[in-house]
Amino acid sequence: MSENGQKIGTVIIGAGQSGLALAWELQQRGEHPIILERASAVHAWRDDRWDNFTLVTPNWMCQLPGYSYLGDDPHGFMAKDEIFGWLKE
Image (tube, rainbow, N blue to C red; front, side):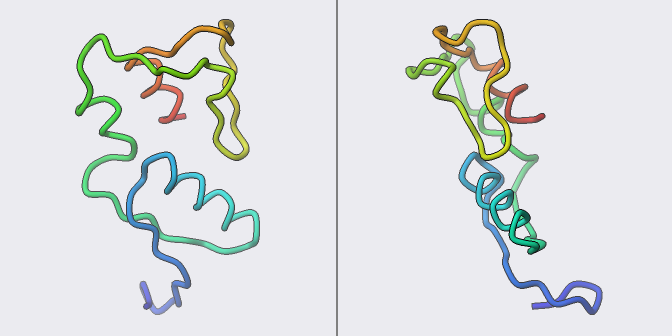
């Protein structure tokens, strides 16, 4: 596959947690993956959750490669807007 004449080695479908984690890992190996997402990145956390949605795992468990939870309540549970903001960064 090519984009503007450049060869693309990896295409990732979806910019959710798994897609973002995979992209980060590939970039650490010197690759330049393309991420395809039907909407904006991590949109489902904002648009497809009810207003009072919270995680059922404590914040300290929330990690993506290269980016851990940095808030002040490691034993709390992030609400929908917090999750969206954290993933958007």
